[in-house]
Image (tube, rainbow, N blue to C red):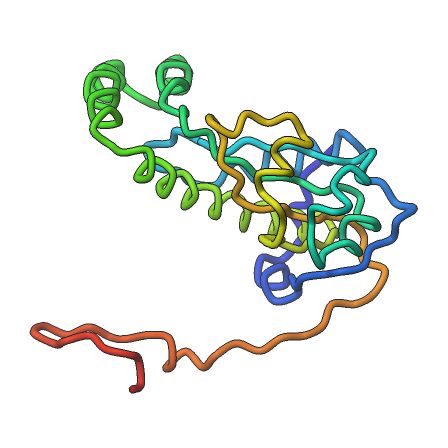
Length: 220
């Protein structure tokens, strides 16, 4: 399946809105779902370690029915609920990733050797909370990329942070010691248009920091 190269980027970012109700009879073809996820993983991550993992729930979604709080319409009608996870042990994939980069001549061998020498020691000095925080940042990056890619494919999404994390991990058989839940992303074909939303004026959210200037609340 070819990527939809003709879609305008600014059309995608301006028309992407959170959709709550989907066409429950529509299922995204498996090959296209794989492509969407592959394109989503082009997102950046710290040292390119790609700590994200995905659990795609297309069938038997009822096992999550009491675990997604006020997001039942997305659960019931979407083509899939994609649980984005962060792998707290993502350092384990460093050699595989860097070796592939060397093989493709995208990374010199000496750079790989340097990373493989310093990264394990650096990770060993981090607390579990610090690794968790770094992993959640990368998880947020891939989540946004996933939603933009989905829109480019003609689908709508809804990021969902309101769910029972411990119980969802148990229901889906995910190791909660190794993986941290980032968010669900509901994906499908919209049955109702999304509600339009507003953004704060840019002068309310940006400070232009000059030398020796103390930064406060923008436009305070």
